[in-house]
Structures are given as structure tokens and as C-alpha cells.
Image (spheres, rainbow, N blue to C red):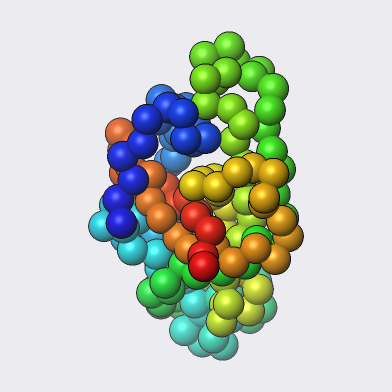
Amino acid sequence: MSTQLPSTTGLLPPEFVAFTASPATEPFWDAAREHRLVVPRCSSCGTFRLPPAVFCWNCRSLDVEWIEHDGAGDLYSYTVIRHAVIPSMADVLPIVVGVVELPGTNGCRLIGDVIGCDPESVHIGMPLLLDWYDVADGSVPCFRPRA
Ligand SMILES: [Zn+2]
């Protein structure tokens, strides 16, 4: 599901979203452009490593394979942004920024805005589904409540 959103949904305006791909993260961003989540896994020891890193924190191997994940996860932590540090953000607040744990990835977590719900209903452990927010240079992950 693609997300074309007006500025009232609690996502940062696209002009505030920027990322820079490196050789270690480029496969992640390439898949994101296609609205697919891939998680790097060490092909030597099987340890997932997200955020992507050049080498495995467990065995120091440089070998990596990219595993597709459906993005369903549980909210590990979050914060609600209610104060517009930049005045032009005022129209989209509050924004809920979540840290979502991805099952089956030895505890890897992904950060993204939590959308499509009342910010007051957000809670630790909340089941979430991955969605994508299209910005100028690609797509970034965001999450919606999972029934
Ligand atoms: Zn490893």
C-alpha cells in the first residue's frame, strides 16, 4: 500500500525527510523504493543487523544477504512530538515516532512514524503493519495499527 498523504496525518512534510544511502544501506533504500522491506543478515553466522552495517557485530564477517520481511512488528518504544520546533511543522503535529521490533530478526528494530490512529491510543507492544511514505528521493517506512 502506497501512502499519499495530506499534511494532516501526522507525518513529517516530505521536505523534512532526507536520507543518504551508503554502500552498506543502498540495498535497503533500493528495496524501499519498491515498497519492500529487506533486512541484512550475515551470511556467515545468520545474525540480522539492522540498521545495516558494513560488518557483522557478532562474527565480524563482511558477508551479507538481504532477507525480505513483511514489516509486521510490535511497538518497542515511541515518542510523541507535540511542539513545533520548526514553525512549518505545526500543521502536522502531533507526530508519533515509533521504534518497531521485527519478529524473526534477532531483535532488529526499525524506526518510523506511526500513522492512522489517535496518538493517545499508541502503546508499547502495539501490533503494527509496515507502510511506505513516498518522498522525493525514495520511500521511507512508516507504520499503521494492525488489527
Ligand atoms: Zn556474522
